[in-house]
Amino acid sequence: MIAALLALVGREIRLAVRHGADTLAALLFFLLCGSLFPLALGPSADLLRRMAPGVVWVCALLATLLPLDRLFGSELEDGSLDQLLLLGLPPSLVALSKIAAHWLTTGLPLLIAAAPMAIMLGLHPHDLAPLLIGLALGTPILSLIGGMAAGIVLGARRGGVLLPLLVLPLATPVLIFGAAAAYAGEFDLSYAVEFDLLGAFLALSALLCPLAAGSGLKAAAAA
Image (cartoon, rainbow, N blue to C red; front, side, top):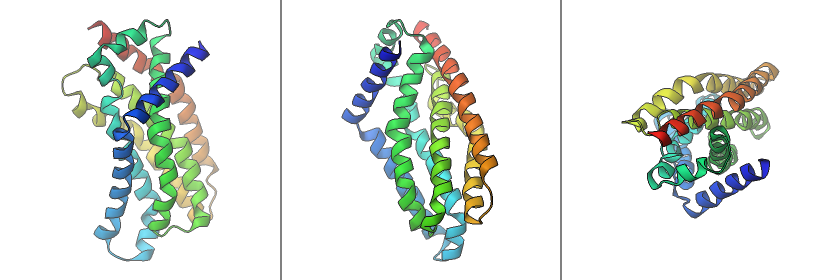
């Protein structure tokens, strides 16, 4: 079962690389969105530095939403979702494989791009560690929550409109604790509690979100 799961993840990564527009669009959106804040807030270096962790987290959250509409939709349209569900794997593991590929092709590039964006906004390089560790814990949670929402609205009318309405409220605690950890590091305060909470969110999301997404896939395939 693990070999089949890894094979599915590899298939999704190959498809994402072959059709790299979604990954590129999310990355460009992340960078462009972050570059707009200095234009809107003015050239105050202190203001930009204070807002940098929050700006990076908000841009990462919004960029993560972009490819979610097609996470399961393309397989439903061309019929390959039915074939995936006939492989013998539980629907939750099929959903987990696509969510894992989503993080590897979207969350990981955003995590890498976060460091230069934060420095561009004025964050000192020695304050990057809490921000990047928080994103390393938080971006998989965003992919899991997004995958769950994409599975639930799969096949629904105006699913693309419902998707952010489902994701944003659930992702708010991740945004709050991730940005709080980065701000705590910037002011030389302890951020262990924020990381503990993000780790707990990640464990809970990894357990529950694939189950909910798998149920959505099964219902959409049966409809």
